[in-house]
Figure 1 (cartoon, rainbow, N blue to C red):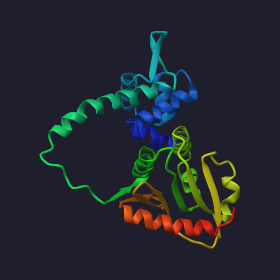
Figure 2 (figure 1 turned 180 degrees about the vertical axis):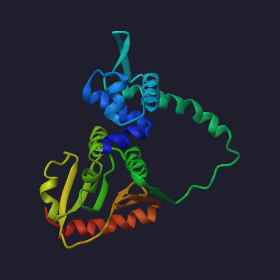
Figure 3 (figure 1 turned 90 degrees about the vertical axis):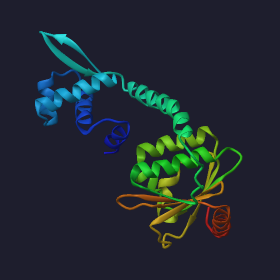
Figure 4 (figure 1 turned 180 degrees about the horizontal axis):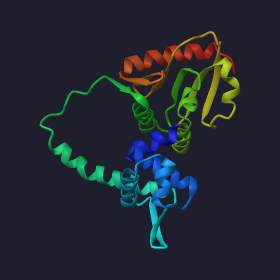
Length: 242
């Protein structure tokens, strides 16, 4: 369930996630009922409730001399993100001041897992602008299939920046790609073209995604490599179907 992974990345522990989602499902609840609902020991439930209260995402009222807990507005989660962002902004200058020398820029960076994949897609968003298109090929629409919640966030951010894209997609997933962004052009290649990876070319970079059970991604920061992939993409585009 992707929402569990998303909450985990926002800093929620496993028990906090169980209790928080239970409160959203059942509405107001006493700690004892939550303990049963979440299949947690009382102590673990109380600790999770305490931490959720500190995060500001739940509240409670007193009824018959007992605390009755309830989940606050879901938008409260945004406050957690904003607070973390502000903290990060404060420590970045301190971290930079500790550098004794500027490390040579890495040309190849590898990322693993869903969090790693998001890092790469965020790099695409941060690198691209409305003046420059980026290219995608070898796609089976995996992002929407494997990470549907993040896919919606990604597309919304991409459209907000008016980033143009061209995508080569396999013919067998044509029906799944009818509702594309107005900034995106699509063409189709034969379904027999088999590849477990897909490639995104943007700026002077090429990102290669391997959509396995535990997805991986590699960014190659090289103008020569990016230009080579662009040349290959344009050849494929010219021989593909609309």
